Length: 265
Image 1 (tube, one colour):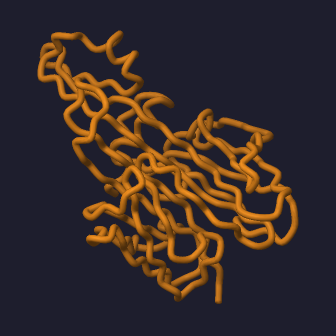
Image 2 (cartoon, rainbow, N blue to C red; image 1 turned 90 degrees about the vertical axis):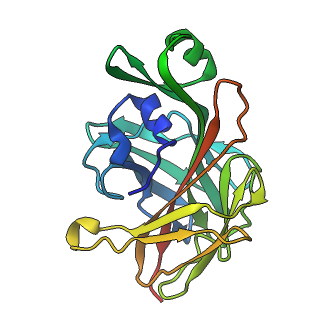
């Protein structure tokens, strides 16, 4: 699972772990509502998508953005040993965006023979990482996690032009099994070739093969994803460039995570 090398900053912000092989996600109980109602969410870091088996994902940075751009506050937030749970009430007609965005620095160095690492803001970097650190390697990270919930008819989703984003050929709350989905990936608002994308259908615990799809965007920044069965899908995209904002970093790692629900025909 080539997931969240950089978004793990999110995890790191949560707490430093050796979670390099773990992904993170937010799982809604429903994404398509015929009338206003509550939806319950799980949020976790785990080996397999949507199977909470490692640690909870804090939601301090999560924004629930209503169709009129107002913010909805999560309710009944509970952080357990393996997952965070929360509810949200979706009242307005249209599409709500649930989004978690983080950026900062990560660093690796040696203290004697002991490997050290850091993830956090640039200010924290200068406070915590020795200026003369041995074998110091520093990169920027930009990570975004999203999922969508629609009440009634879907409404248009707009991008913000920062970090790694995705624009789907079909609305993410209007997906049905058997219909492929074309997704265009944007880096700072521009279609970008070479973005690595991995898509895995949930319930991997109950089958021998994960059946992951590993794709890379073409010259127009696009990939086509097969959605053969109804269910929940986890999408992870990663990209690296040298468009850093700080002099201490040599490269920038961007990550994007999306939860999709595909309904039966």
